[in-house]
Image (cartoon, rainbow, N blue to C red; front, side, top):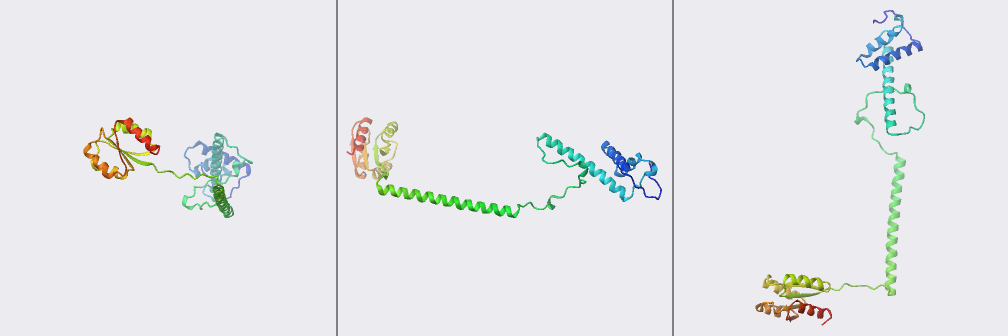
Length: 260
């Protein structure tokens, strides 16, 4: 199919333009891999040969750009409609006809996009609101602290507050007891005393250190090496000999608890 060789310039009517555009869209939709020039040649074949235009003219190139752009816009519009339908998104406002969309151009490189910044008035308003909120929170916290201190001071002055000072536990050394027995005594008297235990598995140096730092030393004489008793006598500020077993130690601790 060859274009007309007449030197007269051809101007299509609206009807002819619509016919050629429709045919061009059909050829594009067929996806036969035709070039724009070939699509134009075949599309205007729907008209009489005397109504063909010169393919190389600028007007034909603009026409093809319009056809291709509108075709791409229609395809994009259909894709957006499908996405909106699948996501159940309701589009508010009148829908723009596909023919009014501009031709789709190549995407702009990412580094050429202008940076997205918040509008300055909105940013200033948000900053001012945050600052005001910070000040309000600080003032509320300070007010609450001052009120709590004032109320506590008033109660103390009125004698309504009992100030409890934790009392340090009395340190008591029990020497000569087995490890199993020590656990039993610890469970029963651990809340009253800071108990330390020395067994036969410990060294004399440990016994000397414990006796020196304990307020009271209880020695189970029936189970304690007599050769080490001198350490307790010399190092302990309050040395007491206890005869018998665990029950005797418990009795001695009970007496200490009662202030004896």
